[in-house]
Amino acid sequence: MKISVLILLLSLLAAAQSPAPGSGTKTPPAAQTSLAAANDQKARELIDKAIQALGGQAYLNIQDMQQEGRAYGFYHGEANGVGTPFWRFWKWPDKDRVELTKQRDIIYIENGDQGYETTFKGTCVQDDKDMTEYRRQREFSLDSVLRRWLNETDIALFYEGQTLVDNHQVERVTVMNKQNQAVTLDLDMQTHLPIRKTFAWREPDTRYRNEEIEIYGNYHLVQGINTPYDVTREHNGEMTRQRFLSKVTYNTGNADSLFDTRVTYGFGPQKHCTN
Image (tube, rainbow, N blue to C red; front, side):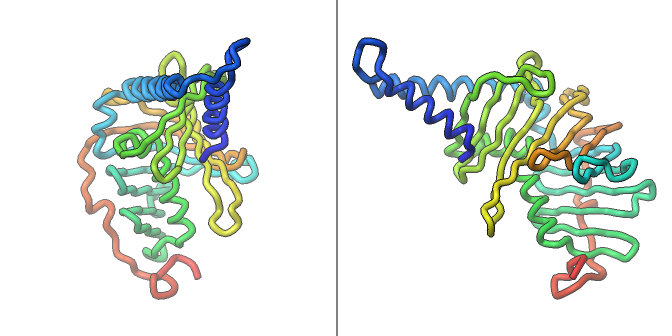
């Protein structure tokens, strides 16, 4: 469970159990339930407003997407080069194709739980570490949280108050699923649009805690859908990636064949890209 959520729950419990001044009595269980219900209702109202701000049914019914833009990688806060042009083809819920460079000759494809890399050498299977990272980002993506998690059973929502994020006054909501995975969303108080998304995960062997942050900006209304043209990703407090879009289209009918490929080389029985 996220620390912030745990603190919130403990705070609510403490407030519910503390005696009123001069009364010497505890808050009745019914009042405790009422506090929790009010918190849940506030969180759900804010999430509903965020979905409506993103486009409502137009956003929820996105089936596919195409993007063009430029991506930047960072190492210890410093940009690696001048950025790379990219073309992206995406299909809900788990198909993704990214073409890099002006020649579009480096291609990454994710189709379900399978990932492939194409270069001048041919096509190989992405390494397990890379696919684990990709699947994690997909599982905790804004689309997954708002379009899939919220439709699952045993979802818990927590309102965590107001704060300031990138010069935006925001209201903070945490969504937790039945696997105890949690995502915290900072929603602009004026527009209700997501400004920042935060989630944490632990290394399976060392249990080291990692924190991932995505910051959304420069929203444009595209086919009735509010789309962030600028996205920045941070890992444990360091900027790792930025993406700036120049063009976005929705529901153009991306063919499944875009996400099919044939492995032509690799190492080991699985033909991974590296030893």
